[in-house]
Length: 170
Image 1 (cartoon, rainbow, N blue to C red):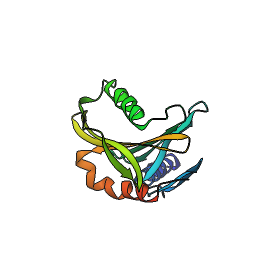
Image 2: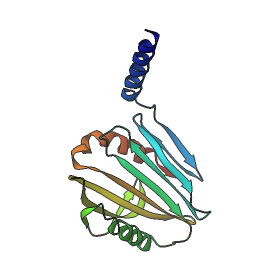
Image 3: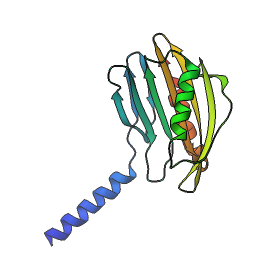
Image 4: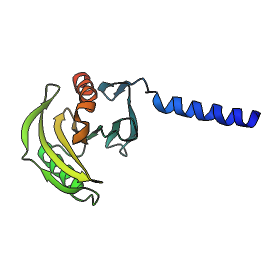
């Protein structure tokens, strides 16, 4: 009987923890900062061998698709060149089908002047869209990539808005 109570207890704890959202948080490093909402978390981050930094913030959930990737590097002083490098990296990903980039245009990310390019692709039968933003500030060149499944746009909007609205580079 104790064995079954233990099994049932573990099952309920697992179900409850899967349904709960993480509280969100703040990111701050090297003068870059932003807030991300509950239900989103930093899933990857790391130093780029002393030449920059990267991190990914994702909406949590089995079928969630919101993803923001932030990278800054010191080795590429030109926004357009960096944007083209990122586009080429996307083109090398075999899992991305029907990848199409829009023309590069002047834009801004939370008031920071940038170059950007919208893109679309299909993967696992789902259509996705995204935007790549690139800008130079100080000695670093920054890229911010937002992407999501078309069907999740309304679910991700609040999270993307909070991240962008609180994003700062000092």
